[in-house]
Image (tube, rainbow, N blue to C red; front, side, top):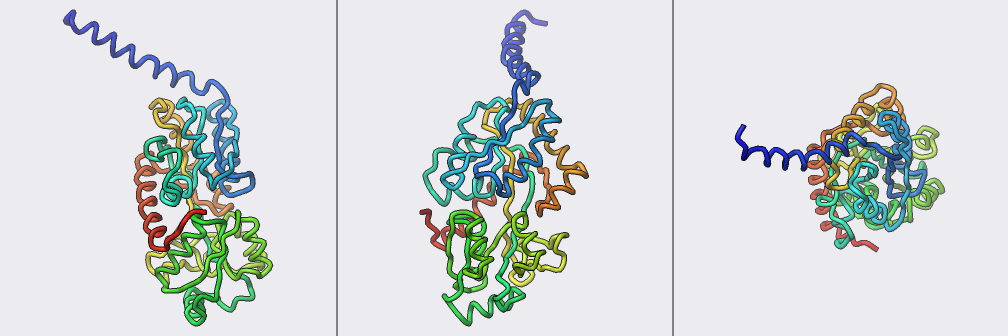
Length: 322
């Protein structure tokens, strides 16, 4: 070995050793999994299913930290500005990771810059549900009714810019209908109004709506997923009538950018291992959420394509944040 090479070797080791030591020490304390919504919603349910199991795999408790407010922007900002040491995870929705920047324009973070993707955890089926008093059972019948009564039918949503809102605006655009939007402050009040017959229809997640549909209190006209769901095999997809009219909610696990590669890799491996376990798969599917377990690169590409898709819908429908 040339003497001149020795200093370069020591320099390289000096750079590598702290990262290696950090990865070996991880996790050194309980890990928090930030959810940008209050307890009880779909993201929270999935986080509380995965959290304890991930904690057991990593040897440290994983605590779900609900940081609701400002349509998920508050929780997203807290996650983005957390130390990049692997002890903060962010379970973000399509709204958090692909919609809010286009909807609000100016937000205190940049998704592509401030986060490192880990994996897409689940894909959540979205259902177009109607009150039983509405005389439609198919997408074709709904389109016919809406065209016969332009501007007279309403749909509720969980709020401006969420998947339930944008999915119906995509439907309006592709079907040539004018079903009016009534936004609510969250899924619970919108669902209450739908169950009471005060609004005729609403797109909602299967996580929330499946028990109600099975109880006969609402009718599932169609799914907005690319394919039918095993839990509702007789319910068609909207795309069977309107090809390309698809909308799924999804939850992606990300960490603050600059999290050491070794820590990032370990979190990815443990989460994907969990998502492939029969016990967890069965539990998530029963909630209406299909496990995914994509690679970090696949999640990054998916987030980019979803951001572009919903930015187009926001522009087409002239959607503006409150």
